[in-house]
Image (cartoon, rainbow, N blue to C red; front, side):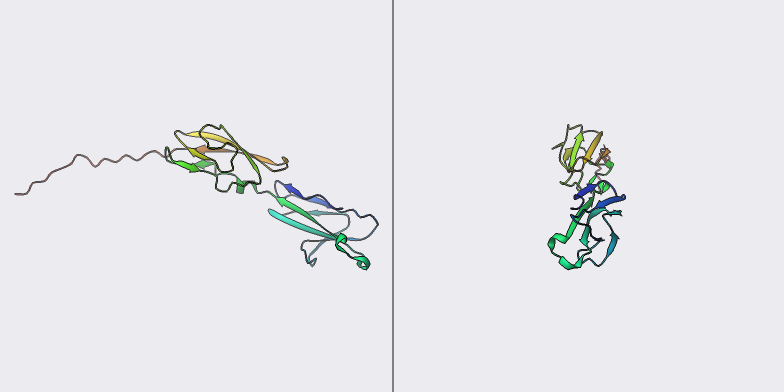
Length: 173
């Protein structure tokens, strides 16, 4: 029995645990081929990198190896800055804009205020901006254990007015 698969908010030291029904040696590896050892014993400390990390543990008793003698723990480190929108968005007035193209369906989003948004729970809502506005977005991991909030300012780009002056007629004689 090993630690449950888990998701964490940022790279940090984490304890992985494996328990056996009889005393035996446990070896932990960072690869499925089990050529990169990372520790021995029931508990090891790891610092997973951003993204999906797989850790493998097997018994050290080579006499009776079967598929039950190897187990895997999956640790996913959510990179919230990658799934969060930029802090400043500058659309033209009235432009329909999807403003979080890095949005991720694996986490939940709650945008406030909801006015002007196509969907206040979408990872990438569309907004048709009519005025400058500050929004807050709360991004939460699937298990509800991790969350981050970000302030997003929508600042409209001022329209460019151009005037070349009065029309002029030239006469040639």
